[in-house]
Image: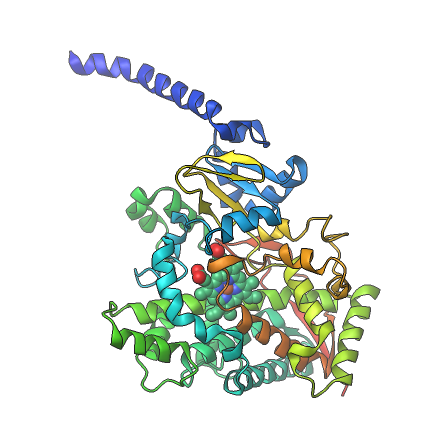
Length: 481
Ligand code: HEM
């Protein structure tokens, strides 16, 4: 009798609960913010765009339509100004706390610098490893010589490909090898990889860079309670080669003093770190440094190689600067610097929102009161395409970075590496890798897009980064010296 009564009542109770939820959402301060009406009631449309790899462009279009503040979902807001960057990512040094989204990035079931959520824990970890990535450390010959030698391997591989029957090189592949070699040099030397020379390391790069785990990752994020079913339906991507490599290298004896490993091993000895911590942190930096640097260079070299008069002009100016200054250090070449910055502005490899929680008590961002617990973010793709700061934002124009007028403002809106205490730790390494590789290539070669290139170079969202959709970029390298 009681069961029958409850069964009859249940739909009504659910309807009342849904109605209360709708009323509460419509009364929230977020309901008054600009954005499509449906976003005040549901996050389903946002999720649809996430699961179909289109979150970044969807949000970009919303900003174009609604302005610098856009409600994305009942509890989520996106901003697109330098002032919002400052508040969300820099207030108090490290900005607001990261959301549980970053729990997707634990390694060996251990939280790392990137996936640690509270600010205080993060600051402690960062203090003991930051010096390995400081510009003064990266500029040491033992780091730069290693990266420069990997850049030579890259060019040799490309020239070999172009001399073969195909007549082109797939730079997507070789750039990811280069990025793997560059970051493992810094992490593990002398246990770094040589993926452009060694077949075993090449397979390691393939395991790291060719996968698509976006849907299962988002499913885990939204439904952590269903993790068993999700893992059953979509088993986690096995990574035997990279796990094995990281575990073995992390236990290696006498790593070079400049490496991250030497610092982590010393720290582990001096404190009571869990045994998995050293490999977990190293695996995290490996993951952070391969696709980002590889994709950034791939988008950039493709742009430089297009058969348009503008790309030919820019490539020509770059070659001229490199030819006229063969012994100038790579960090003192203004045009090279402008090309790299413009590449990262137009094609940021992490173009997507980097979400944070508004602290309890709420805060005011861009003049809007946002309640505590709301998820807020900015995305580099949109911030770096603001036409007031970057006129003709879709055009690739390195010269804009050479103009002293507006320089401070442009730098304030540059968000490719994030900003504040949780910005990119590997920034100086990434810039050095990019510049050394471009100098190696463009001081000796002209590059063009191959006639065989039919792959899609559109940016495709992954879980946080984005990559060229076709994962293939065929270029022709012509030696000119
Ligand atoms: C062009 C290449 C790169 C780009 C554009 C890039 C971009 C970024 C961005 C935007 C963040 C902040 C993400 C967030 O807040 O969610 C970040 C964090 C991080 N990056 Fe990079 N990155 C690059 C290369 C590297 C390299 C080579 C490493 C080296 C090991 C690295 C290590 C890290 C680490 C450890 C963090 C976490 C920092 C923290 O939470 O304190 N990145 N990166």
